[in-house]
Amino acid sequence: MLPHPLISAEDIAARVAALGGEIATALPPGPVHVVAVLRGAFVFAADLIRALPREIRCDFLAVRSYGSATETSGGVEITHDLALPIAGQHVLLVEDIVDTGLTLRHLLDRLATRQPASLHVCALLNKTSRRQTKVSADFVGFEIPDRFVVGYGLDHDQRYRNLPYVGTVEETPP
Ligand code: IMP
Image (cartoon, rainbow, N blue to C red; front, side, top):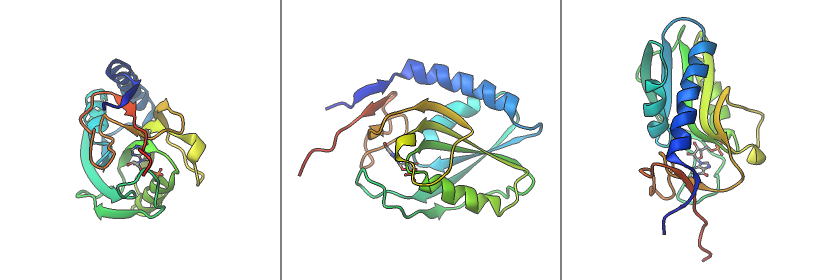
C-alpha cells in the first residue's frame, strides 16, 4: 500500500524555494559549505542547493542512528566522514528530519570541534513532540506531528525514498 500523503510534492517544492531565499539572506557573506546528512537528506539537499542563490560547496556525512525499526536506538555513529575541511567555513548542515534530536546534537558537537566560521542547520521536517535533547534547526521546512514519515529521501526499511511526497506509514502489528 502506498503511504498516506502528508505533504504534497507541490507544497515541498514551494517551501524549498522559500527556504533557499531565507537561507541566502540569513547566512553571512561568503561561500556556503553545504553538508548533507546521508542517506535521508540527499533528495532534499539536491533541491535545496538549486534554490540557494549563493556560491556553495557540497559535502556529505553518513550516520547510522536507526535500524530497521521506526523507533530510535539513541546511538549515533558516523559511518562516512566529510571529504573536505570545514575550518573557517560557513557550514549549512542539511537534515531530513529532527526527531529525538540525538543525531543532530551529536553532529553539531562533532562539527563544532572543527571550528567552522558559522554552523547552521536546515531540516526539512521537525517533530518537536519527541525531542529528548535541547536542540533545534535554524531553518525548518515543516513542523509535523508524531508520526513515522517516509518519502522525499526518507525511508522505512530502505523503502519509499523515491516517493515525490512525504507520507505516513503505520507499522503492522506482529
Ligand atoms: P533523531 O536522532 O531521533 O532526531 O533521528 C534522526 C534520524 O532518524 C533522521 O535523520 C532520520 O534518518 C531518522 N528518522 C526519524 N524520524 C523518522 C521518520 O519519521 N521517518 C524516517 N526516518 C526518521
